[in-house]
Every structure is written in C-alpha cells, then in structure tokens.
Amino acid sequence: MGPHMQQQRSFNTDLSRSQLFQTLLESVLLCHVGMVADIGGTNVDDATRRMMKYILSNELALDYNMFGRHGKNKFKDLCLFNVVYEALKKNSLVNQQEAERALSKWLIGARDRGGRRASRQPVPN
Image (tube, rainbow, N blue to C red; front, side, top):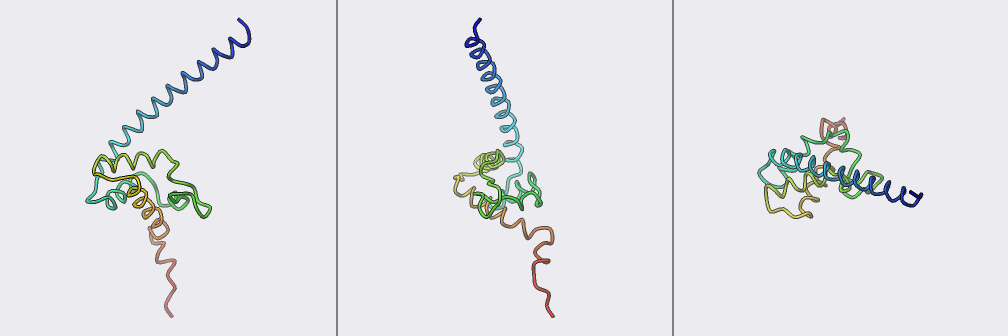
C-alpha cells in the first residue's frame, strides 16, 4: 500500500470520526433544546430572559453581545444561540430576527444585573 492510499484511508477515518462527532453534537444540542424549551415564558422576551438566566451567568454574559461589536465576543456564533433560538421556535412562531433582538436585549442588560446598576448610578450629595 502506497503513501497515497494511506493518506486516503487516514482521511476517510478522520471524516468518519468527524461525522460521528457531528452526529453526537447534534444529538446533545437537540436534548438541550428540549430542556431549555421547557422553561418557557409568556412572550419571546420573557422566555429569552428565563432561558438565558438558566444557561449563562451574568459574569460570562458581560463578555458577549449578539454580533461581537465593541471588542466583545459574538454570541450568535455559539451553539448556545442555536439552542435558545430552536427552543424559542418550539414555544412560539418566532423568527431569527426576533430571537436576536430578545437575546441582544438580555446580553445588554448583563451590566446592570446583580446590583451593578446601583454601582453605576451617581451618588447624590
């Protein structure tokens, strides 16, 4: 067996492993979508707030915004975005733009949660 054949076999093995990993990842994400969707809410904003409180800490949320602007990380590139979006779709007829808006609002609010808003307010004399 020549080096070309070994490379082909190695490539096929790597591809099979990659496909298996992708299948497992999709299965895990689908399970998480179901769990997160069960959290629910009265509307898209409420459901987003409840879901995000469950899956992401405020401290970590401070490092993200939806599109990665102003030196922050891009939340939309995370698997978590897809989990929340799919969970929102399970509970209502929400489109991606509505999910992005609700998630953006939640991420922006991270700086004020946990008593941080009071620390940003000027102290009256």
